[in-house]
Amino acid sequence: MVKTEEYALVQGLVGTALDRADVEYLAERVERVEGGPGQTLVRRGDHGDALYLVVSGELAVHVDVDGERHDLATIGPGSWVGELHFIDPGPATASVTSASDFVALRMASGELPRLIEDNPHAASSLLRVLIREVAQRLVSAGSDADEQRNPSDDPHTDAARGWWDGMFGRLFGAGGA
Amino acid sequence: MDKRGMLIGLPLFAGFPAAERELLEDVFVVVRKRRGTVFMKQGERAQSARAGIFLVLDGEVTVSRVPVGGGSAVEHALGRGELFGVVALVTDHPRSATCTAATDVTVAYIDRPACQYMHSRHTRLAARFEHMLARQLVKDLRLLTETLVGAFAHSDPGSLSGAVRAT
Image 1 (spheres, one colour):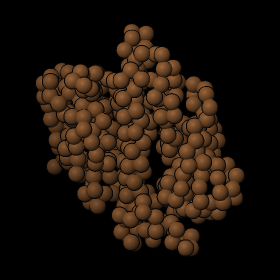
Image 2 (cartoon, chains in turn blue, cyan):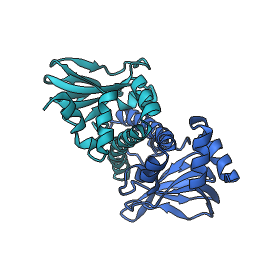
Image 3 (cartoon, chains in turn cyan, green):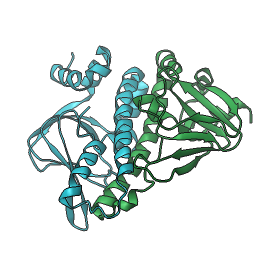
């Protein structure tokens, strides 16, 4: 029995890159989660426990340095959370905390090796989506970083902040999948 | 070591079952190139059928990147087991760097049609290979993120110079 709601959500968010059988298989392995504002899904430095695909709502990507919170980007529907750890277990590079009510699809972060063994076609399709996502962010944020080479530009001035906002948006995939 | 041993003996493939490692020969072409051979040039758009991934099996390849904003080229060297050409293959973006053989080199090459062949005929190998590629990209993205976040949080954009490592 296909999980109808999850199927529709996976289909709507990444379905153009996957065939029907892959979408059905993945829909069986995700759970729909929801929460209110202030819920931290990933904490910088921690090993996350899941991959999330945001269905609705807004989440803040932020880091805490010397006790001060720096908001870097706002992500929303179609954005991934925990994708780096899902691919390659390691400490998270930033924290992600919900800024509103939200709905997301969640898959446990240890699922990928099992997916590769059990259904390599679906695993390959999902990996292709994630590879394109990571490569795209690497290219666009990398190009931005190339351009920002003037040490006198304090990132916390109003004039510079727009550039950093745009770059962090691209770095953390604020545009969605 | 023969060409076959150079490829399937790479640490990158150490986690692959032996039977799948043997299949790598089916999808990669192993070639020797002279010092000075230019594999790709920054700014070129790889024609989609010719776009491919290179794996250094022996020797050294120099990756040279002129920052988009200008300034002098930033270089780093790739040795055995390191990859290049991944980003252009999956995004169709122009090449982000120029890659040149710094010594006589042996490289393994897989192009887009061979990737499709692997996906349709050896799907589990393809998934494992794509997982390995994804891990390499994640390592680069983590490095870039740490540099960018550090520069922002410590108000030090000058530290971005040379931060971008082409993949």
